[in-house]
Image 1 (cartoon, rainbow, N blue to C red):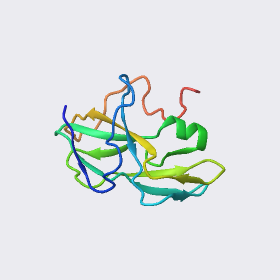
Image 2: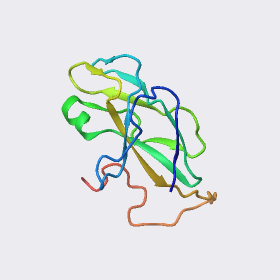
Image 3: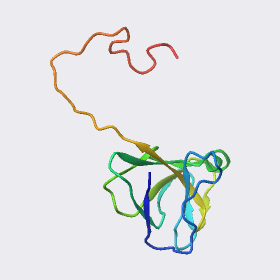
Length: 145
C-alpha cells in the first residue's frame, strides 16, 4: 500500500518513519513553532505539519507512544484517533498530560505513532429481533472480570 504525504509546514522535520524493521507504526513529529507547555491534567492540540492520502478501504490510526505514557503520563485523548481515507487536512494530535508535572513539548519531538489498517464497510440492515447468544445483552464486567 502506498500513502502519499504532503508537508504543509515545518519542512525541516523528518518524515514519519518506522523506527525498526518490526515496528507496526510510523512515528510522527510535533510541528509546533515554539515549545508548548502542557500543564498536568490539561490537553493540547498538536500539529504535525503533514497531510496524507491513502487508498480507499484504509484508515490511519493515531496512537500514543508508550515511552511518553510511562515516563511522563502523556497519552492521546481520543485513542485511537482515526484519519479517514478521504481526509486531506493537516493531521493533528490531541495530547493529554495525565502526569503530575507540566510537560514541555519541543518541536520535532516524536509525539504519536500512526498505524495503517484496512477498513471494511458494513451494510447495516434494520431488523426487528436479533438472534440469541449465550452472552445476550451482558455488558461491562458481566463475566466478573
